[in-house]
Amino acid sequence: KQEVTQIPAALSVPEGENLVLNCSFTDSAIYNLQWFRQDPGKGLTSLLLIQSSQREQTSGRLNASLDKSSGRSTLYIAASQPGDSATYLCAVRPTDSWGKFQFGAGTQVVVTP
Amino acid sequence: NAGVTQTPKFQVLKTGQSMTLQCAQDMNHNSMYWYRQDPGMGLRLIYYSASEGTTDKGEVPNGYNVSRLNKREFSLRLESAAPSQTSVYFCAGSWIGTGVSEQYFGPGTRLTVT
Image (cartoon, rainbow over all chains, first blue to last red; front, side, top):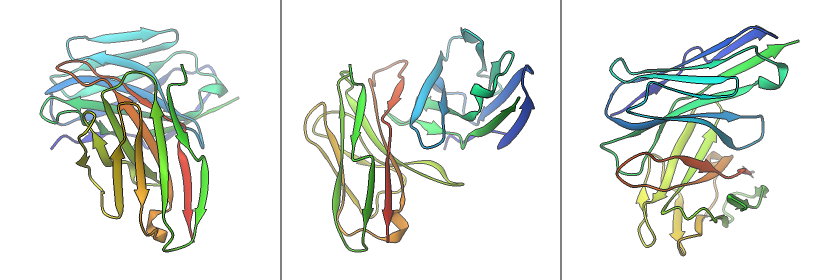
């Protein structure tokens, strides 16, 4: 069964520092990996989606990489701001589980001014 | 486009009461999902509907029923609420085919059972 892990569960960085968030998955047979942001009391907002054939995807200050063979994805947020404080979750769509997604537990990020 | 919408946003129930959580999407998704999110447990799939007319159990289906009313609407029913069902409930949608699929989430329903 596919398992998705996000370590650390929480981190705090000073404003301006680059953020590096990790997502590991146990089975490389995936269609895609998706990164989400969740603000307290809110729903999940999609940030980036990486297809299994891609190595990375970029949107503004966000860059996500995918190394399918080693079961890892990394989300980089450049020059962090206090507004980046949120919980970040990753999810994979396995090829052997039609229509289901497997989520990590998330990394809670605090960016201090 | 409203995206994925959920009603109500908040609800308080007494043990044993019933209620239905509503979800609708206008994104032409064929698949819809109900998750619950609890502190320390992450997101857990309750039920999903791969297409109109089909529903399947997820990881934690006990105590819940679902109805895929049409392509747009997917409801979650608690027949006899229990304090263990206190949680935040999210509906999501996706277009599922043999390839890349992106999930979109609703804003959530915060349910408290006393």
